[in-house]
Every structure is written in C-alpha cells, then in structure tokens.
Length: 127
Image 1 (cartoon, rainbow, N blue to C red):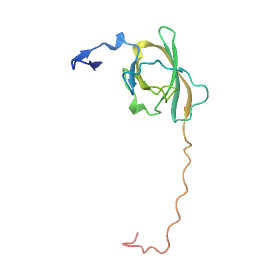
Image 2 (cartoon, one colour):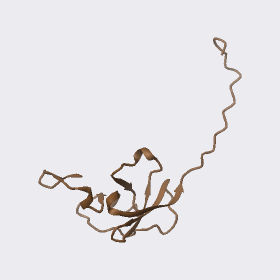
Image 3 (cartoon, rainbow, N blue to C red):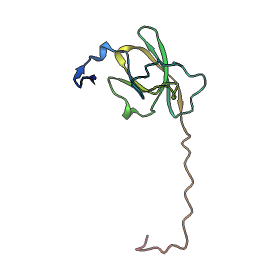
Image 4 (cartoon, one colour):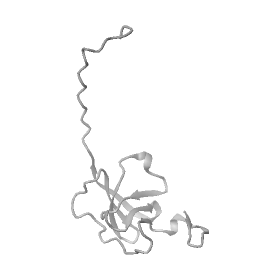
C-alpha cells in the first residue's frame, strides 16, 4: 500500500501491517464508526458480509455482488452507517480471521416482456 503523507512524500506500508484503510469525507473529523453492525437488513444491493478480524473485532458491511470488483489483496466494503465520516473501508485479507456472507440483497432478475412489434413499420430487405 502506498500512502501520500501530509508532507507530500509517498510512504509504503505492507498490507500485513494494517487492519484497514478508511476512506473518509473529512480528515479533521476522526470519529470512529458509530455502528459496526446493521440494526436491520440493509436496503442497498450487494453482499451483506460480516468480517471477523484476527483480534476478534466484528464489522459488517456491504460489498458489490460482482467478482470483477474484488481483488486478491482484500475487500472494499461500505460500512453500516452511510452518514458517518467513513465512506468505505479496504480490509486486507491478511487482517481477517473469517468473512461470512449473511445475505445477497438485490433486485429480482425477472425478464421483461418484449414490446409488441409495431405493425405499421415497413419491413425492409426481407427482414
């Protein structure tokens, strides 16, 4: 992981040495997460996951239900309280003891009925 510090220098940190990278709205507001679990079933689409860290801390969040957005290094989750200062958290796999998918939340995949063909349309070229 490479971070840009306040002096403008790039600092390299090994992923094994961190528990999470927090993407925040304001750097001055350093409050911790007010909620680490969902009170009710989340409304946003995706995978509702529970992360158990090696120090036994538990954190729930939402992940995209898309394998192309996952990396071998870790997981990018949205925390339970979307109004808090923390927008997203990158959690390295090396910091986790377990990851449990609690639910897959999303819209139904019903096929829409095909629109009726317009009989007024002139067929061209023997279509």
